[in-house]
Length: 267
Image 1 (cartoon, rainbow, N blue to C red):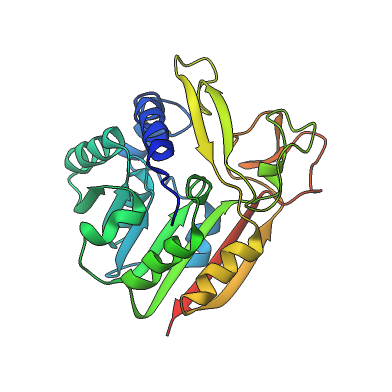
Image 2 (cartoon, rainbow, N blue to C red):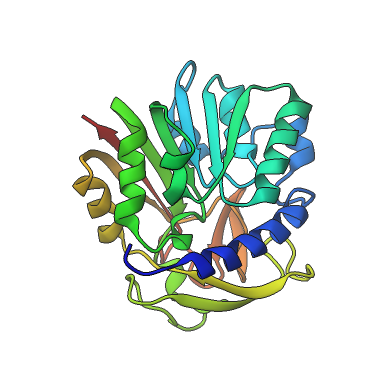
């Protein structure tokens, strides 16, 4: 990346540190249920990624580690990465509390080569990740670098069509592709709209073609690309639940894709 994004990353990190404190105690994340043994991964990634027993799994942008530790419960040897100090601290504490084995690294995903020298069977990322990254070529390079030959990259994330809308899903506000830095005056967080958290956040929209081509350019072979007309999480405004754990934007039910998934392999 020729442009210096450090100020944007620092601002986002500060917000995510504050959000972690709220998120870990929210009903949205259901930490209490997870600690009692409940599964918090969604049927999408569970069914599409499949058996992870005895696999080394690298989880990029892992937040405070619940999904990472869920994979560990399912038998994976897990390393999680996140740029939030508070998130990584919470992930490490949660690992100890649950008596699980996992490693967590606090760094920007772009800087991971300075902190980790291992290869993995699986690189995983999910839900609300690449919108914080301006350069997907560099992201895809990290994925390719850490995958063993024959390894699998898997991601599930919110569809870029969603990020075109304003917060209330009334108007198209942003470009579908990566034309600009999106600056938002953030108030609260998706688990608690009234939380005492505020500040500017910086994001980037990425089209499906940009995402796929970034991976292909780094030598990954696409195994599947799927789109889902629902979200497993009620994390946007004006959402309705049409079936258990299947959420839509009210008035747009089954009209716009909500989530996509990618599975790709390294030769």
